[in-house]
Image 1 (tube, rainbow, N blue to C red):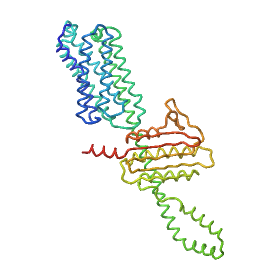
Image 2: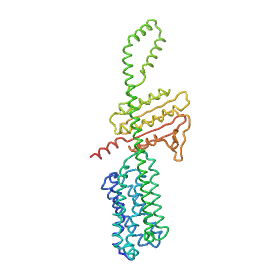
Image 3: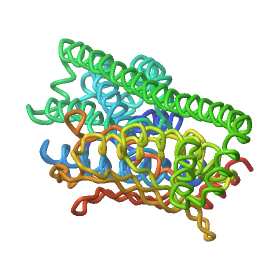
Image 4: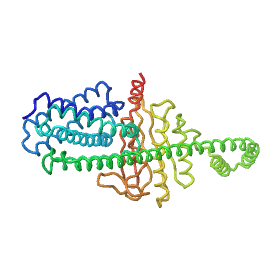
Length: 452
């Protein structure tokens, strides 16, 4: 070993510090508990990195040991990252592999500079020249790349959007990570790879191209999130317009009924004089039906929920579907208005649309439940369903409007998960059932603690 223990520890610390620092800089606002706890976890990342690198260097007799050490480092860093940061796992893996590939290019560039500066010391291992050149490489490579992606990464953190996207997007930087591992450890010594400028420039081009792909992915995800937001806003506006039109019609009907009341009284007096009990009942039933006396003016106290229920009750009535609602929700509840509108809107839209496609004499949509005294919002949405819905390999129901899982059901899962809740989709003979349970008090407490 042509280098001291201190030289190796300094070099390994300088190599890992940029990755860990930039990860903390980008992710600190998404700390699971607090930024202090996150800082402790990121510090442990650095210590683990140095310790594993040191252990690997002590026993490194072939390139397989080096690859094994790199993989173990990655596993430990990812584990600590998931402990420290609260966000979608796919996003965190996306960020980790992005930064790790920059770190690989930085190390290669530093070793190339060291070989050109002092080839003898470079081949002795991790001498003081390695620490100097890795600092130069960080300034030349890591800082520009890191700053270039900082804005992109911050823009996607905390965005709920479509979680299905992040189940797969992280595989792109992970593929580049595997490419780096194969390139550095499969063909022999990494020093030989770093000694040729063509190799460094080639890998620099690969990294630049990969980051262009990352940027495009993030832009597409953000655009997709905007489309989902616009869809939610349009759905809310449509509900509000429907509720306004319904209220206006009810006011006009009330005025007309008041104006025509004397005529109705005259008819009723005539029927009473003739002692026509059957005719009286028919007239009352017709009056009740025409003036919608059986329909509730308000389904619940919560205006957002009431607007959604009113909107879909009319859609159901227009297509001949019976709509039953036993739903109780107060106005002040720990659920965002947009979340509530999208949640109820997606479930009822799917239910009403499903009934419209059923060749059934009596279609039915039912929503029951609401707010419970223990701080839980729990309800069910059931609809007539004569055809057994198709499920994928994971047991999730496929959309009837397009290939793959439904966007509406995925949005429902995201919203329910955000409120520490559970959602279950199931099929029973003749009925499709959805049950939702959300712990809104926990959400309210969390919001208060964050504001404090």
